[in-house]
Length: 112
Image (tube, rainbow, N blue to C red; front, side, top):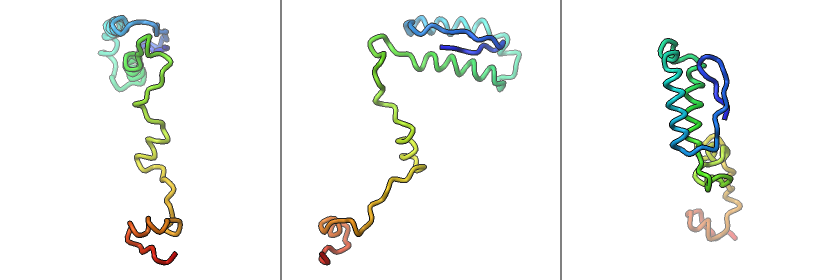
């Protein structure tokens, strides 16, 4: 994983490490760059990208036996938008409902 350091350099972090090793790498990077972070404004893009990158490095960790498996807990972007109401599902017109469905809804099913 590529990460931008607060000093502008880019480094590549090893992906094939255990969680404990990744946490050790993150702690070392934070200790090394903390003086620069402390002096600068925490709202600068370099600091934001650095901290965000470190967070992603830990959050997206997968153990060896979990690699190449999809995460069933994560919803697709389309499904997330649909659930939030940004994408409307097509509605079924009442004229397409069967007799039983119309009776259940109280719309009267006697006209067929």
